[in-house]
Length: 381
Ligand SMILES: Nc1ncnc2c1ncn2[C@@H]1O[C@H](COP(=O)(O)OP(=O)(O)OP(=O)(O)O)[C@@H](O)[C@H]1O
Ligand SMILES: [Mg+2]
Image 1: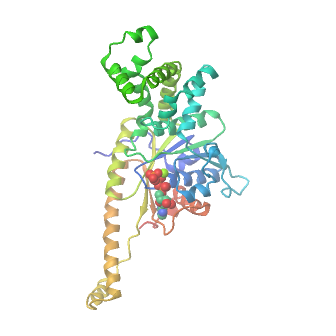
Image 2: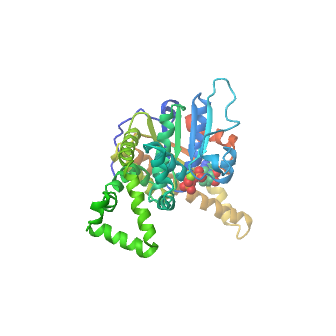
Image 3: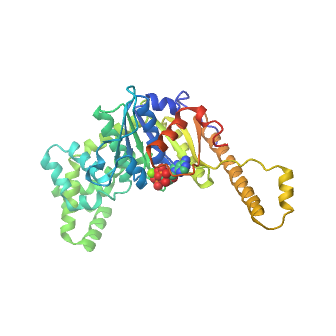
């Protein structure tokens, strides 16, 4: 792939922390998206901004540090203690994404009346599928971002994204919702009662036949009722998906791609960067996390001496040193590839630390490296 042409060359990670209204961290699984999102939140709060971080399934100890015990209220913003101390500081809040709660809130917002909303929310079919709709988690992360952004309560909303097999799903989520609403089966199910009786459309009758066989006639009735009641809010859902799609491409938004320097992760990051470029989402930077340090060379004399020693702990040490050097060198070439792929966007390297980052001081350390290049220099090399 050729070096991408940046549409917003001036956008950097530090700039996003200081000025953006929305930041999304995305990338392959297990590379540190949630940790990075939390560290960006710490940096923004310490830069004076009222910030909220929406996390998805944070590691247990990080959730504890952010004050997010699992439970009903975790999906509302909680203030994170111990992040800000100076009078010029802002505040950091965190919440855990709850796809079902977000969907419920969306339905209530869009429904014309409480009765209409209840008809959807109490429908057994809705209850069965709301948590497991394909792409629902991805869409809900974006929907929650929109809810928080339009509330006017926050200077900056940071959204961590779910570990999806293809991180790209996230970017397509709003368009996919619109696609779902245009699907022939959905369309057939939402037409009026009379027309419905006459429907000969093969796809929808097959679908209903299958549902009836598997689950019985009551479920068919519930399914039809569900899709009909959903039709009342369809216009609202479509508009919302379009609005979100526009917001994600606006100057207020910054995407940060997180990757590790492993080839599988870099391959996935490449697809994601391509999609971001192609769909014109604003990219603020690429964070390469979990980088092994490059060991100091032992020097020829020491190597020769160790090689003459035969077996023993020092020789094991030499072998280990060589292994680590090979690994670190392989990572350097993956980092160079990521640098090429990120084009004009900033590339930030973060070392693999000895300990998990699960407390506020750990996040503060990481946030300093994200905002201040001087803190990064030399660390990962
Ligand atoms: N630079 C680092 N050094 C050491 N440990 C790290 C570093 N960055 C993240 N970790 C640890 O790696 C683990 C995975 O991080 P995290 O949960 O942020 O990844 P993720 O990309 O959000 O994962 P998932 O795709 O499962 O959501 C956590 O235990 C975290 O503490
Ligand atoms: Mg995560």
